[in-house]
Each structure stands twice: as structure tokens, then as C-alpha cells.
Length: 324
Image 1 (tube, one colour):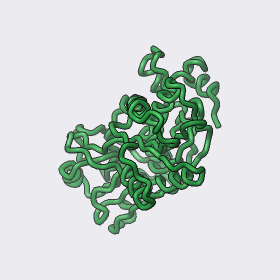
Image 2: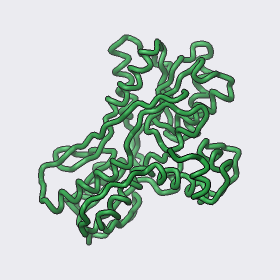
Image 3: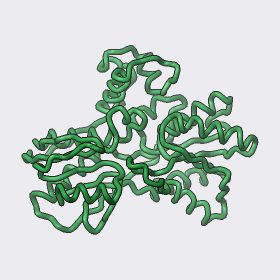
């Protein structure tokens, strides 16, 4: 595992700055470019390259978050890294776009990362019928998709909490939305959390807190949970992603609530910074770089092998228990 010093040396900053950035220290005044460099180096040092025979193709890469927005949830940075590195290894010309930009029709296919409305999907299909979606599956009868099995992820978290004797388990998450600001839809992690506890007659609606998926949302939602529930605060929290969990840990620390002595926390994704926060974050590993790599392999397979039957790929995940 790369150390904070390794990251600092490659990013050209101090180890103290790296530590504070990776712990989302709100009091630190540092340029966005510096933060971006630190996060990218952390991701790069966690990346393991795979190789395959080069093929020359021109692929549009549509990312629904900008590189600035990635700093709020570097889950998407990991996917981007996987796509970029795999494309480079295979001699694929990757033309990057963010949501809202017009895609050139002179391409062989599209990799679309994120959530897209029916209208957006129709627009993409009009540009190229060869599309691989990553992190969403708008039409499994028509398109390839690389996905996270959130039912399995949720089961890993909840089974662990139950095995450790927790009977009150909270959930902090967010709403799924499209960039077009269409009415939000239920996140799959929340859905499976509810189903898991309902089947066991353990669901308590008071323990569910929702907003968005950034670090500060986790901080504010955990503060709300602490103040609303008092002594009835759950002994464990399933956090929909690692940034939420990092924000929640900060709130618990400020309130003097021991982790894991009083409250246990598990996040989702195992972003590169999760091992550097204090206490180090327990989380479910999502292989984001491999998601990106797989998307490149699928689009090339679609184009070069003339495959017409769509594939839906769920990658494995792993529960990683650290200090929280």
C-alpha cells in the first residue's frame, strides 16, 4: 500500500498537506488544483495496470461529473482512471466529454459513465448504437452495462453488523438524480437496506437520513441524527459511500462519540483515501478501475466482434474491516 509520504513525494507537497486533504480537513486552505493532484496521485498509486493486444479505435467517453466534481466523490475518478489507462494500453483514441457537451458523430462507440435520462439515452443512441453504460443500466435488452451489485454490497454490510450484535442500524445516503434535475429516485443502497431490515422486522424509519452524497452531506446528516435521536442513536451506520462516511466520522468525533466504541460505521467504495482517515474506515471495496477497464473491453468487443447480444457485468466486491 502506498504511504502518505509516497503520495506527498509524487504530488510535490508536504505529508501534512496530503494527510489533511485526504481527511477532508475543512480548515485547510489549499488550491483545488493541489487537491486534484493529491487525489489523482493517490488513485494512481493504487492502480494496477492490465495489458492486452492494442487495437486502434476512436471512442467517446461521456462522464456525467467534471473533474472538479470528482473531488466530492472520487469513486468516479477511479472509473475514469480505469477507462483512460485501459484505452491507452489498447491504443484506443479516447475523446472525453462531460454531460451537456455535444458529442462528435465521427466515433466508433460511446462509453457513458453515470446516470442518464431516457431523453439523453435516445440522443446518445442517435450518435452511435454502440454504447456501454457504467454505473447505470437504462435498457438491459439493448445496451451493455458495467454495474455494482448493491444488493450484495448491502448484504455484506448488514450481515457483518448483525453478526457483531447490532440491533439498531442506521442509514445515511442520498437521492439518485439526473443532471436535468428530474424528480429524484430511490438509491439502490437505501432500497436494499430497507428490504433487509423489513424482512427481519428491524426497520426504524427514524434511523434513515438522506440528502446528497458528498462529505459535507455526511457531516450534516450525522449531526442531525445525533441531535434528533440522542440516546437512541443507532449503534451502527451503513453509509451509502465513503465520502458520506468520512463526513459522518468527523461529526461523531466533534460530538465526542467514540468510534467504534459507541457507533460503528461502514462505507461503500473503498476510495483510496478511506485507509488514511482516522479512524481508518471500514468499507466495501468496489473495483472502480476494473469497472472502467471492463467498459473499454466491452465496447471494443461490441465493435470488433460484431456482438449484438447485450452484456450486463456485475463485478465482485469485498468487505474490508478496518478501525471503524
